[in-house]
Image (cartoon, rainbow, N blue to C red; front, side):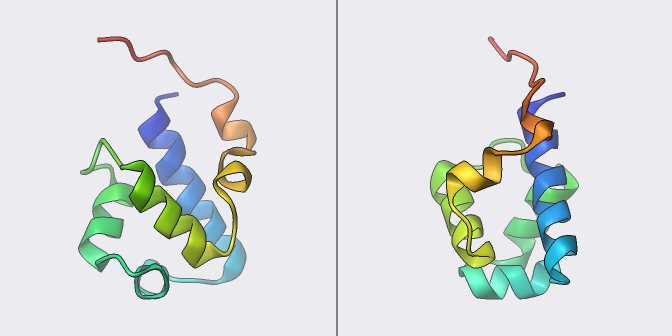
Length: 80
C-alpha cells in the first residue's frame, strides 16, 4: 500500500471512531475543509508533516499514535 492511501484510510477511520465529520475535523484542526477533503479523497498526494500534525491535534492524538496502526506495516517503498 502507498503511504498516501494509508494516510487517507487512517484519517477516515479515526473520524469514524470519533463520530466526527471531515468538516468538524477541519474546523477543529484549523485547516480548510477543501484541503482535508483533498487529502482523504486522494487528490492531494503529498500531505506535509505540519498539516498532518494539525490533523493529529484536531483528533487529540500524537503523530506516533497516528502511525501506530497496521495500515502502515506494509507501506510500499517509493523511491523515484
